[in-house]
View 1 (cartoon, rainbow, N blue to C red):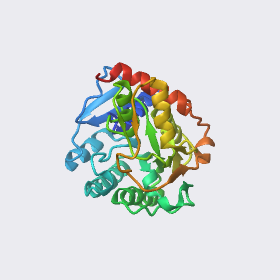
View 2: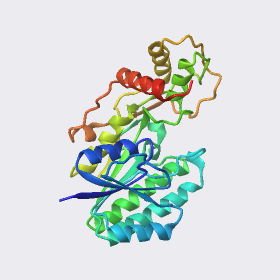
View 3: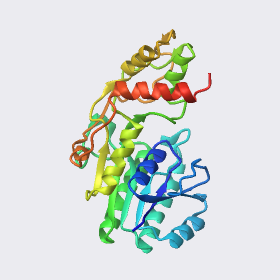
Length: 300
């Protein structure tokens, strides 16, 4: 029997990897978007859908009656953590969950975020660390998590929250720190960064996607950290990129203000590992693979 699944955000950084893995596992993926996935795979059904048109989204879900949904779409543009658009996406996501239930939905996974947590704790464990982040982005994700879980429990839906931590890999936005440093190094340009003393939990996007898929297909419900379980100093990542690219670039430490003040961010991943997930990339292997991808796909 053919398995059908709705994946929102299928064209995104994480979504393209999740979509590829779900196809590998025998699903036909319905990928609503205004962007093309640029694939001719018959197991990926690309649907032209604008999420700003709520009535169109409702009609779409009524038409296809999905029993499975991985909801990754959200506003990820400039000023994400302070954007008022978080309210729009929270409201739409709750509506989508309601329409999902009304049309026979059974399994729903939402993309949560490390930004749900109170960053003052540093080390984050599901159901133990408070989800009381100060940003509207973190609060919107936490609200969807809390309300979604309660609604799903009352309506016989397996609701899962994949709490996504920092990640890197192919197709990341060039302005993010890892690709920005890689591109500067490949061009032998000065590398302009902050002091990079923060320690952060980083995971390759492929391993992130595999964690999401593993959680979705498991019997586990609730929130699960999709994280490496280890923190690495940003300065070490920059230094490894310089080494692996054999770049002549000069690193200008501290010329860019740090994005966040939190000195340490790490996620306990015992729940994820209990499902049989293991990362396929070490940090060194992942950085080398990502550098190779940018060599082939970057513009120099």
